Length: 527
Image (cartoon, rainbow, N blue to C red):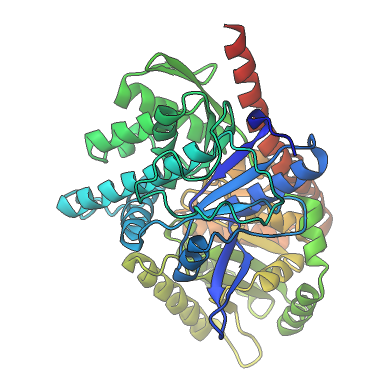
């Protein structure tokens, strides 16, 4: 393994590629993390380990999210995988109260709501003393990551993946500034900071390590200035200033990148070049770019061939009989718009009785962020509406909606395998990988009903049936068109979407960001 820190890649994200739980005997066991961001990065790092230059170490810095994670962090436990891409994982043992306030108080209850434009504005938000306490915790949380990254930047790992990183995981808030890990910090590691949880981290790291090459990537949409300015003025400035501590800022779609540029111009008064997508601020030029995230089609199909997926596919097919299948796979996240999707299916059945007994809606809606009251209430509403549809239209021989609210990844893959129609109708979504995974997995050649507000619409929307996610009647009409579409037309569209999604595979997405940092560093050396 090379000792040149300039080859090192540090990844920072709230959720890491591994999580821990306590076994019955009190021991710790780890399992792979989930979610689109984690799966994309994991796949990209794995491809880089196989295809990239040898001797390019990577370390993944994340937060301990449970008591088991914190126990693992205190023991210096890291993921000790055997496959490519199984990088060492440094978990930060951030105090539980700080993590809760930063994660649920700010990231999920404020920033997520702003970027997805979810607020019931006559009533929310209200930024008072409680918000200010949470904001201080969010700053401390970001500072913990900056401290850990500062200590790790340029430290070449001398052991194999799986070796405990000097037992220092989790000391970032205990006064160990700039010494989160052992070793002397060298010059120029590449740091990839992920998402809205860590909006302040680029600036905090830049202040400590001006030599670091920093990229920040947003996996969510970005709010337009009129909505972004709902934040307190100093907070809006701090978020933009924090992100502009990076050298390179990435977004999933052009509309999100352009909205960020508009915020920089209107909120900060920064010099913005919208043609070249760059921001000049505090004496530095920061590049803003679009990197659509696709799917590792080969790995996804290989997973779908496993026995557990095939067993689920057989059971679901048997349960549906010879009926066509409308499939959705989502978390019960407010932005995913599941309730309106069910309402559109209800209208389809109410206005087009020819589909009675001929179609089944497989709706996999997995509980999300149950610590936030709005999310618990939304999950309850999803269950309620699904039951109402079954009560209104169901017969002893036909259950119109088959709702699953328990997370079951193999079952979700199986549903995509046998889907005739895939329904993806978010209010706003940074990308939505399920919209890409469904066509790749489909063995029937599925039609895709897709919200025009999903970032994926820019990548695969040409061959989808695009909808306004608020228009229930238009969504019902699109579902009817999808169900009625000739099979050859479905298959043609599905193949085109598959090709586009595979072309933006995670390894290309990751490589583009690293190449940009390398080019930026080369230009700096010429100055």
